Image (cartoon, rainbow, N blue to C red):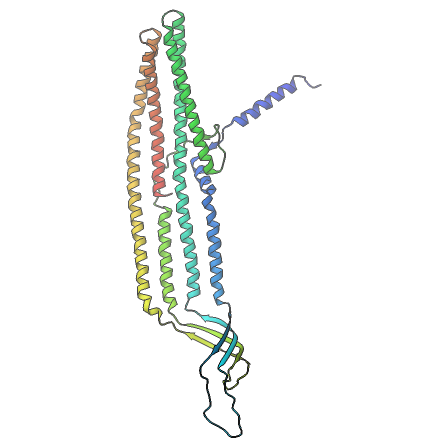
Length: 423
């Protein structure tokens, strides 16, 4: 027989279990936020577009070695034509027409183009690499914005935690004051003052929670995931020793110089001889027989050699322009490294400052706590009033919050250094 009390008990147990599962706050890490923000950013879609564009460009260049077919048409009228200045008795030599027509097709097949096709494909790939790296530079900037939101939420969490401790301190003082009022040892206004302080602390908590929700909403938009008030953020560990410089901008400068080197080789290739086959066939008046005044079909084929000479006129200047572009890239790289090192030194100074502040935070908290505890005893004995006690309670909360703020500011400075150098 089924126990009639078992079913309600089972339902209550399941309800508690489900409630705990639903209330369990999801944990979000800084690294996960950075990865998701990069993947979710709309600009990341350009990766596939750049790759597709480069693939189409390479395919188009490859078709250069396919037979090239062209159709031409021509109609002319000329003031004079070729005549035979000899009269042969009994033979009528027709005169050529001054209006002449030609319609023909031509097929060209490259055999050797001086390496243009190969280098053009390399140039297309190099340009795609440059565009991809420029996109990586833009995506890398997203991490800094995510860091600001992430550490901002952690600081709000610390402020909420200190606010909760302050409310507990006020509640403890209020209980003692209520007892003193009941015994006639304190004025009712003393309790009113503490009650007003508690309400003020609750208002501050409400404002902090609203700001936290706004920050979570913005972070959720970045990572493409809805975040609510139950979302918990993991406090990141210290990143340790800074890595070797690996900013995407440096890779971008290197790829730009590689692209210039391909352009330099392409300049030489454009001035090399070209060799190919050709076939021309069509209908004309006259055709190949200049003495025929009718429409005739014809064809002609052979080998064609082309040696570009005029390219040497501008080769020196074009190479000089590439040298200038390469020098400009070197200047941009040097400027970037200068600014990066300047920023890193500033961030390192900030990190050192917070480390030094943390050395004395614990001592300040201990001293402020002892003063507050003594003030609580004095309040209970009627030696001081509630305003004096609240001043000491606020001082303890401020000291605690300063320590947490310094810890988070030190962590953020360390992660900023890592971001500035590159990871």
